[in-house]
Length: 197
Image (cartoon, rainbow, N blue to C red; front, side, top):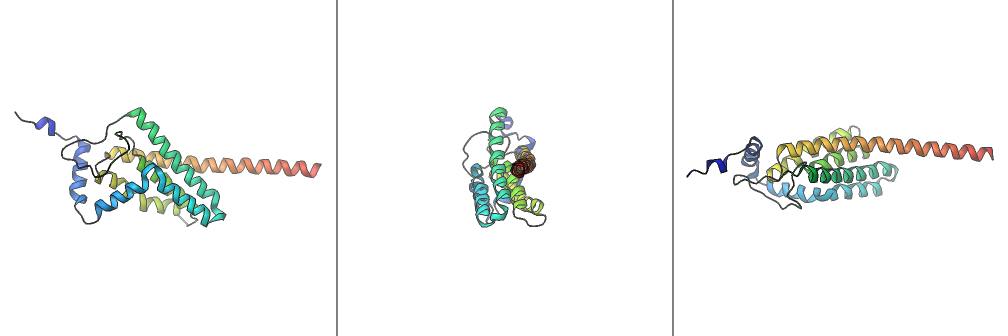
């Protein structure tokens, strides 16, 4: 009896097989992918960079705090969505899983989510002109690709994760602006009260 139906690949599984065939065997690719995996686990790498930036650049501490908060919130949002969607991770004989994962749930990729938010917000916090664009352009594609090279996410997992991360970053920036506006209004009111007393 043929086991062809068992071995049939979905379109996304075909993409994963193709990505692994093209990249996984190249020198340094798997160690780099595993390194990115460990860095992005639970958004801890991004939180560490945000904390370091806040210490080293005190004049931009507010922006680095926003970066840390945004990366963590993005990660938390992805975990909540995973528990709602409950999509299982890739599991096919043709797909090699190259790293352990804390859960069996796949959609969206938490690494993609927190890394996109973290890269946008840390790039912005750095004060480098265009940093909010340059940092994610350099960081996000390798992180997304690494999740597929390691066989732990489908393409739509990482694409959705990146979109959620970008939306979270924009929300964090807006939240920072609103907080600053509120603080300025409170300071102005207190100043007016002081001058009238």
